[in-house]
Image (cartoon, rainbow, N blue to C red; front, side):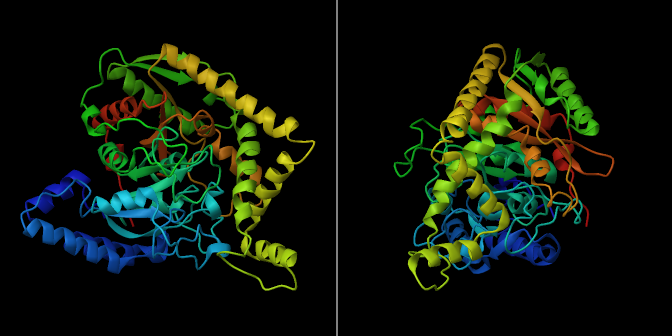
Length: 484
C-alpha cells in the first residue's frame, strides 16, 4: 500500500485533507495486515506513533507551521538506541535491553516530529547479508515471500517496500543499506563516512559504519538525509561541514557535461547476466539523458572483500568485547567471573557473530597483526587511491549494487563465503568512506528487483541525488510495487 511521498503527505497535512493520526493509523493497519508474512519489525510502537501524530495535529490546528518530516511514519533499524524502547540488535544477548539514552539520529527525527512506527529486524549486530542471522525471525522479501530481503538492514528495506512505513533508517558497514535496497526495489543511500552521527548506533565496524535512509523515491531519501546529517560532538568521527538542502539538487534534467564512469571490474565473474544487462540498460539511459559515459578501471576494487573481512571482524572483535554480562544485557549465572563471561557469550551470540569475533581476534593477535590487519589497512589505502584517480576523470561512478537478485531463504546459510560475496560491489565504497546509493533500475525474469549503484567522491552527495533523480524522472521503476 503506497501511502504517498513525504511531499505528498506534507501537502495533505497542511491542507487538512488528512490528519497525522489518520496517516499513522493507516500505517499501523498496514503493519498489522502484512507483518505476519513479511516480519520486518521486531517492535511496533503504535502508542508512541499515535501520540506523536496527535501532537502534530495539535500544531496544525493551532495554525503553526510544520516541517517536512512532521507526521511522517518512519521505521528505525533495531541497532540504533531509542530511549525507553527495546534495542536488541536482533541478538539474544540484548533481548531485553532498553537504552537509557537516545541516539543522535533518532533524537533529530523526534525533534523533527517524525512518527516512529517501530524497530526493524536485521542480521544480528548487523553481521550478514540476508537478515537470516536475526535471533528472532527471518524477514521475507515483499516481492517474493520465499526469498530474502538482503541484509543486514533487511527489515528496514522490506518495511518500505511493503508500505509499512514511508521511509526508514538503516546502517551500512559493507553494503547493508544499498544491497537490501537493490533486492527490495527501493532507494537506499549510504552517506559519506562521518556525515551522519554514529552516537547511539551499536558499533560493529567503527571505521566503516554509517547510517542512512531507505525510501520509495530519491526526493524522500534527500529529505531524510537532510534531517539526520550534521556535526555531533558526541561522535569523534563526525564531520564539521555545512549540511545543504539536498532537495535543491533534484533537477528533472541531467546537468550538461556530467561525466559518468563505469567501473570495469564490477562486470565480470559472479555477476548474473540479467543483472549485467539491466544495469547496462540503465547506464545507456543516463547516456541518453546527456551524461558522458566512459569506462573506468579501479584495479584494486576486487581486493575489497578480502580486506574488509579482516578489518570489519577485527573492529567487531574489539567492539563486542563490551558484552561481558556485568553492566547490561543477558547474564548466565556461573561459578566464577570467567565462566560467566564465556557462558553468557556462548549463549547470547549467534553463529555468524561468533565466527566474526573469532576471525577478528585471530587477525589482531600477537604475531598476526602485521600479516593480516596492517596489510588489510594498506590495501584499503590503495582502494581509496583508485577511487581518487577515478574521480579526477569522472563525477559519478556506476556499478551493479548486488551481483544477483534476491535468493531463496536457506539457499546460502551453509556457505558463508557465498553470502560474503554478495557485498562484492558495495564493500570498496565503505573502505574508502565514500557516499553510495542504490536506485531501482529494472527486474529479472522472475519479477525480482535489480538496483543500479551510484558512487561519488567524499561529500558529493549532491551529485548522487542529482543523477539518481534525473534517472528516476525518466523511468518508471520506482513506481512499481509488490503485489500481494
